[in-house]
Image 1 (cartoon, rainbow, N blue to C red):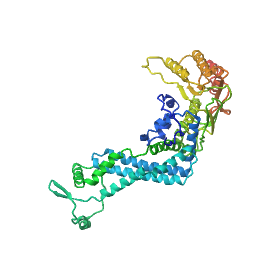
Image 2: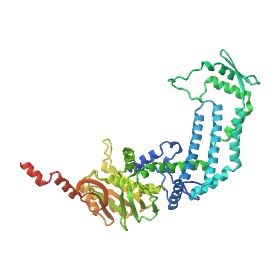
Image 3: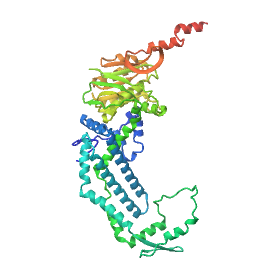
Image 4: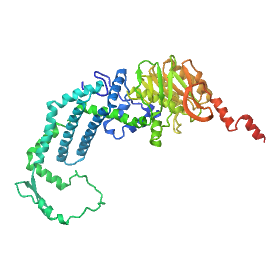
Length: 513
């Protein structure tokens, strides 16, 4: 088995990409992933962000690799290799776009030589480094053996020899009217230098060229293509060898090298995405994961999407992100989050979902410290606008979705519910909410439920209540900090009413006037 930077040696099960990715949209992770892989789409990195791991060792394996890649010298060597491979892929892409097969074959040689140079350069870089991860150590050994193999030597030497042979081809062109004759070069004098020297005194400084360039420098017109075909007939040996080499080495990239390139791009795409946030003082950690649903402790968690938006809007200024803590003790499985609108409840629950899912990918999570379960599924139920053309009511759709979630969830699942069941009456929402929470608790599911139904905070002994705190000197000002506390919706409303003169006494007094 060839070494992989993504999965430990001997791992038989490679996770398949998730088909249902609705949770990523609710948690806004789809935006994070799309931004991270921008410019790297051709390598199929997206499916790696939707392939959560299934074992603790797989997570530890990725943490080791990422630890190596966060070392500047390893990152520099890896990025250098990836840049060279990027140029190789650019050459291959350009070759595929050409209409002249002889040109395509010749450019193919440049791609092979570039690939061989990239491999040799990476061998030289990694030989002097001491990677700590199992993944990089295994790959380095494989790479050294591959570079020293007869096949690799033949691949590179063959391409370089063909380039040398083709560069020695000489021919002459005779143009008379519309007739073009191509013949073998017989040592005739070349007057090109003399002609250029004769006209040099008439040369002027190049004027600004405002014309559009409609043709790539690699493109050939029909005359040029025909000339090339005739040259190939005059010198069949090197061109026949070129065609044979091209046909024999279509799959010239070694699979482990391609896998390394893809995996390294996956890791670096995420590390580069979070680098500006780290620079602004936001902390990321490698979470401790286990198959046990307890304990759950997350310190300094924040919403990765919101942090990215604020970073882009605020430039290099101090971060306005408010981190929070989240913990569940023995027997506690559900957190009911209540409080006023625009208090950060949705952001808080999204952050909890993000941490658990990113942990299942083996990536650093947006938190100072985290101990979480290796989730076998992250499910969401977020309130959606009701479509007028829908055949079913919004409530019916919600209940069907929640039924599916409950049927699939286990004690290692995470369910994030945001304003679920808000399309019905308060009394019905309370009844339905208690029934849903009872089934989730029975299965031992970790659930965060943002709701306006405050009595759900007391629905079960496994349920704990959290709410946002306000500035004690200005109760209207949101702090976006969440702590364990009983719901205060009515008390908060009373504070607002008093502040703005909307208490019953104040209103009746004003009406009486």
